[in-house]
Length: 521
Image (cartoon, rainbow, N blue to C red; front, side, top):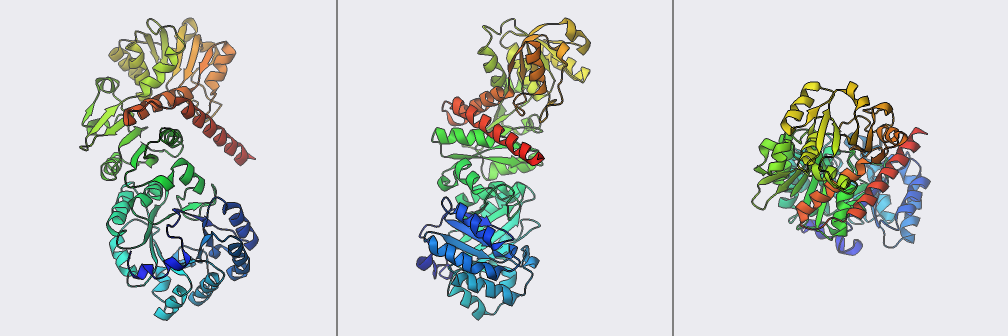
């Protein structure tokens, strides 16, 4: 920490700053303070975005009263000008006046953007620093570039914290930000992260690399910057207060990936088994970008989803014979020497639930719908256990090709009414995210068990039709939990807490359904 960064901190700020600052915004002063009252019990570090108010100065008496009644609160006052990404339309003089009054009201930190500070006289800035710690900030809403040059410009102005926030266009931009923090955070008090969906991981891993704190939203929909995560997620899901330099990083990679429940289930398992690791979502728009992230952060393990399950194979240093046969990889382990090893746990996700229900898979008649990566995992996994496999695929040629490789048979849809199976497995995306579609009609379902790999919704239309047909159903949740449990075991060498993982998925899906229903009202 520079000497300039240290002049004010002992007097007003805690020795160890909280890692999460919750940004609060409202167009009405009463609502702003009400939100703060609702948050303060669990969040002692708050940012008041005064620029969201039409007359921010009128809110300061209420803020003063709030701070006076909460002695443990640490508060940043921000009144960002419109030209610099905020909402304040007043002059620089009026902005400085608002911030000075905010510090007089008890706000211990004042955020002032670099562009404004460069237009101020030194005595104006010193006047602000006499009463509050100065957070000198710079936001790049276009990309992540010239971080060193930006910091050099900022260091010409004495401040207590230097906040540099960029926008991540790629996952690799997070690597750039993290390496910047690792290099500079020992010398200066930095607060840095990347905005945007691609930058979410920097909000979790930035503190691990040296950012003094990070920002969070109060709740979903109340973000004051693109890609902000809620404070509850940062603490309960990502355990950000425990993240340190020894924390291992795992993630789920795909495009898209925002819908994935893997972070919820994996972080719950890591917490339950007391593993010092964090699991993040990696929205990889290209495979090259993903591999850069894996090698440079580094990431110790990956859950690979579409569209990379097959594409990643040539970039792995080794795979087990099972994965080679399937031709798809959903699990990557990064060894200590940096080499990448591939596995496929989708097979476990299919086989384990069926082994619990059937006395044996030997000779069991199984119909697999689809011929993609998930279907191949089911086909080869069940063939290894002696099941008799039939394949039905929309593209006849792809279905026949898989059937030849697996020594299975390809069937026509017209034949289904005459055929009976022990198990029908849906390995297609038909029915995902809706209750309208089903890959089969009711009269085509002739099986003891119907297993849908889709887990959202919990009961797909296919499973509903199967119940009406008298079949027993297996939700995709079981596959999701079993394949995730196997991944956890490969990565950590510990038995996975499957019951807890299942409960986490069920709860997450219930919450998702509730949010969806509320949004439709």
